[in-house]
Length: 419
Image (cartoon, rainbow, N blue to C red; front, side, top):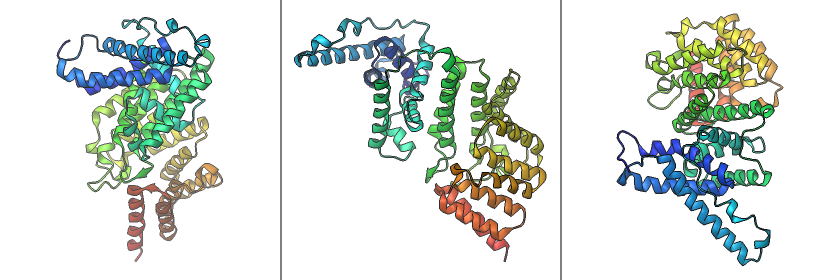
């Protein structure tokens, strides 16, 4: 054992958890049992390492301990089955009790990427993909995930358990998907990380606008995928998008937690280091062949972040990027943002006309953002009574308390201004 210097055990364990789990699943199979064994090893390390020091090979230590736990579990399971006189149908135990994986194996990183592919398998629902990714790859406890998504811990535990059972029942192998499937599976991974980030940056419900534990975890995982796939432009684009967006976090809420619109934020509070890193990433990604939605969104975020003041924003460039993005993705939220850019360049009536195209989209039915954006554009057009009504409708429809208060305040301010 060696005593750690400047290394937080908790951070180290979160980094190692998916690598250890990937190694065990690759060697033994049994995703569910491997996950339980790794959790036991992590608990043992959390109790032992702060007192005795971090071992020279922390990953090897965890794999060894988890392998012992899993071996004991499998032996116990086979003994139980023998007692039930089913031993004749068993897979030989020797297949399970192979030596622990070689801790120096170069497939370490591949194991974690395969684990991400497994957690984001299309056989799972998006909610299950998110939960399982945060649990198995992110290393978050079930309690922490439940708290972030404002559901009871028992509900989240059932969701994760069902996801693992679905993987087991489907017989999904622990290996890289075939080449022809890899792009689609990577797209699913990036989409899950994107959803995790968005929920952290603007929570869909609850008393807080932001859940930094989720946005921070999404950035950490995106960094990891970027290290594994440094030449993939969309991976770089997603990481850049997260960094450029999260850079505004210090300025996007007031002291009371109320949202501050982008145009009203104190940009001196933005994180310039994150902006510089994100800008460098997207500049390099755009130089690669091809284009994709994450790169375009990151490019839009970079244009916003490069403007020292809101009135210096290059809206024509943002509009052109949204027009291109809308050709690549069928997403009504993109159309909402496109409408704002259209209004900033060509006037509010042009933006309102574009909003009319999403009224019939079932995905936007009863969605508060459509009402909020239309209210904003009507306010720009001087139609305050209509804007007030839409702000109030949007406030009733949102499940986010900060957004509700913000929309109600905008309606109240307009009502006062009209007197």
